[in-house]
Length: 330
Picture 1 (tube, rainbow, N blue to C red):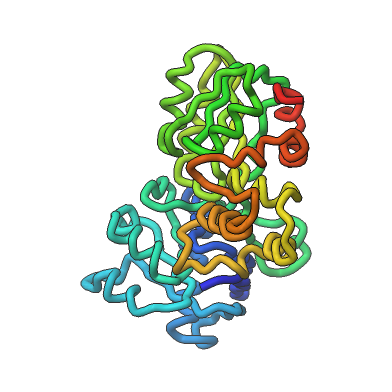
Picture 2: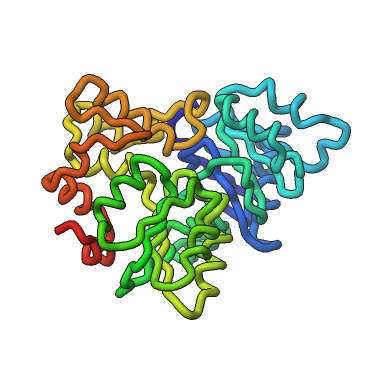
């Protein structure tokens, strides 16, 4: 399954309007914010159509799994579905299981999961973690208008940070790149996204820049932000680009006729049955585009092409200004 899918869900009193762009979307938020109402409306329309009192406009096939599916295993309900946006209500504990995670990665469906707790078995994007909010711009219409708001994409970046230590999620090519870029600093690999907090803890003094792959960091972001903001003796900046490979792809140093089209509509090119996250897709895309070239990309060992001065400058142009100013490589 690939592509972007739009939903408009209506009753006489309320409207929900949103788009689903990736294979995993997470809806968070406190009680009484509309999560249960939305899934109830979707479920009832699926069951009874317009007789339900609701209308659903969408370009997707969809399915809703509620808690009241008592006596019916989730596997019986979900494994028969293909190319479907599957909504799963909160408090279904199976969504935290390894078995469910494996199903999500290979089923070829999209999943919208209502959960206030991080789903650490799943590689979802920081851009696909939402809360439901009322939009005051639509206050003139008779229905209460609700939409999805990203929670973490605009997480404030700490300015004027010295960046004594740079912690990278990547242990190989990304780490090699940032070691070149910040050769005067202490650059540390966290050995994967689960090791970010531990790596920052071990670097016990000095300001820190932590660089992670935002395309698969959704389950870790809340815990990291809470820990970083609790540190009073030093400043910690968290930068979450899609991935290291994405930074290379958007820098302009890779020449391909198809690349601009792909980057303009990534959802249309990432098949959820093949790629568990956009981070995996960007890696494979960069590998395939450079396979028979002098600048062949490898995740394990970074080709020196990517650390040449002219290319470093182009990649750095995609960085936030606060990081550009701190680069040791000029």
